[in-house]
Image: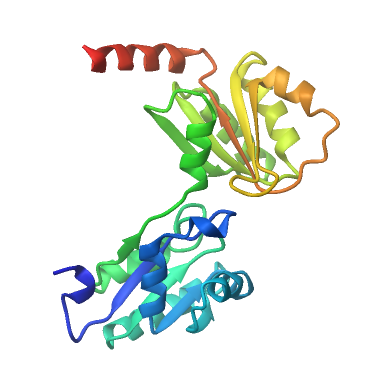
Length: 249
């Protein structure tokens, strides 16, 4: 018996991954889960309504975002404990991964609720796979701080990594980020910039930081961007090669 069916009195809390661009990436399980829910909480109800309309899902839709999550988390937990089936979705990808959700999961677990995770497409794994950089190990830094002091500290921490690093960035700061990484890690460090993953204008740029900066020096970046950078020393490439040799023996 699944967790969804394990109790006739307690409700269910589901975290549902949604497409990062192409709505056809919605999974069968995710669609079925949303159809069975009593209420769906969304980071942006307008964007989620587009998704629900496409698949003809007519359910009560309420907001859950970083500005109301402290208040809404307790409301959702009470509804689940009362027997309702609730789902949380964010604008794209998996809740909790650079998106709202952690607070709700933490409080749900405290209340004895085991969230049901409905996985799906992820911009994080998309970028790692598309980067052509070593992927046996990688570090995820999400969105870097905007304030200069904290941002500089984060860049220095990334420069010390001995594995590939994935960074989410606003299109308005991608050019700045590439320069910061080049300054801290060296212009010959390998990188990839993934833009608009799974969307019509999907693009992946690969090369050294210097090469990518030269290719895009006059670019006005648009859309959602992810930067993947290799280790400054190139140790990630050497270690990945050693890892694959060991596993093939």
